[in-house]
Image 1: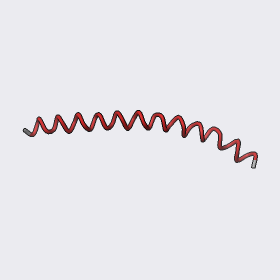
Image 2 (image 1 turned 135 degrees about the horizontal axis):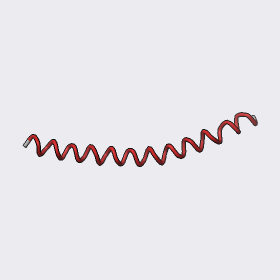
Image 3 (image 1 turned 180 degrees about the vertical axis):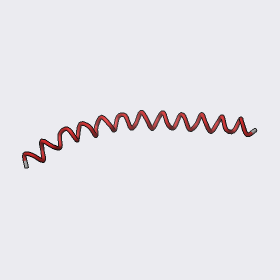
Image 4 (image 1 turned 180 degrees about the horizontal axis):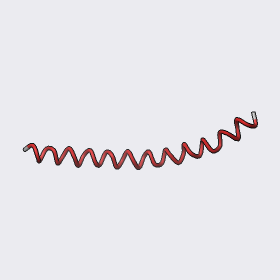
Length: 45
């Protein structure tokens, strides 16, 4: 029972981690893009 529930929790945790990683990867691209655009805006102001 413990191993079975642990396996279910492990599968749920790995799925959540994979989802979080894919979301953070998309957010990372937006963050890098905003950081790339921000210095130019700060220098121009």
